Image (cartoon, rainbow, N blue to C red):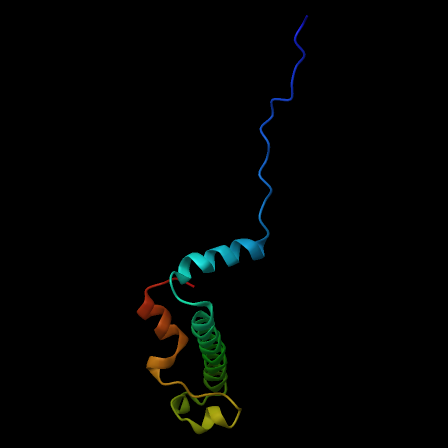
Length: 102
């Protein structure tokens, strides 16, 4: 009896959704830290990023308005409901200190 050609194509893996891939990455990076504790770290980083972005935006506005001499004056930030962040608490400093690229 002649042989029939069988389907020899390899089966493709089902691709992961982006959410599943991100979740898996987070779990690997988290290591032995409990999820309840991990969320505090992540939420703090998200807040720091947000506050840092708002700070940099306001700083840029001050420079564009010709108020460069006031970029280190707290009142010029708080008047616009922006947190004034000292150098060690800025997102850019944290990224440089962690030696990562964003």
